[in-house]
Image (cartoon, rainbow, N blue to C red):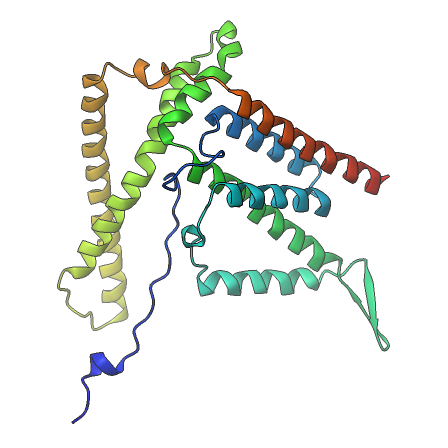
Length: 280
C-alpha cells in the first residue's frame, strides 16, 4: 500500500515575514527610552554614514546596534527570512561590481585582479544592512503612539516659523498606525483571492488577460478597504477628542535618555575621528 501524494511530498517550511512597526513584547532599558531620543540617534547616525560611509563607521554603528539588540532582548525570530531571489541578486551585483576592478590588486601568477569594485559593493551592502537594522531597532522597541508626541516636542522650535508641527506629527502617527493594518488587510485579500476557484486558461493571451483582471480586482478592493479603514479611524479619532489628543501627550527625555545620547555621541565622535585620521 503506497502513501498518498500529499504524504510523500515534503512540506516546505514557510519563511518568516517582515515584522515592522510592532514593538517586541517585554521591557528593557531600550524599550523605556524616550522615542525622541531614538529618533535623534537615528538622524545623527544617518548623517554620519552619509558623509563618512567608511568601514570603521559602519563597524562601530553595527556594534552599537548589536549591543542595543542584546540589551533589548530582541529574539532572532523577528528577523525575516531572506528569499532565494535576493541572494541571487546580491551575488549578481557582487560579480558585476568585481568586474570594475580597481585597487587593491592581488596577483595570481601572471594575472592581476582588482578588488576595488567588489569592496565598494560589500561596503554599500553592509551600510544598507546597518541602516535597516537601526530602523528595525526603533520599530521593535518603540510604541507607535509615542512617535507623534516625540515629533511634536522635537519640532517645538519650528513653531516660531509658523510651521504646522502638530499636524505633521499627527499625519506621521496615522501613517505609522495604518501601515501594518493595511498590510494585514492586503494579505487577507490576496489569500482570499487565491482560494477562489479559477478556470485554467488554455492560451498565453488568456493567462495575461486573467492576471490583468486579477490586478484590477485586487487594486479596486484594496482601495475600498483603505477608504473603509480610514473612515473607521476618523470616527475613532473624533470620539477620542480629535487629532490634537494624538500629539498632546506629555513627552520629555529622562536621565537614561541623556546617557543614551552621550553613548551615541561618543560612538559617532570616535567613528568621525577614525575616518578623518584614515583619510588624512
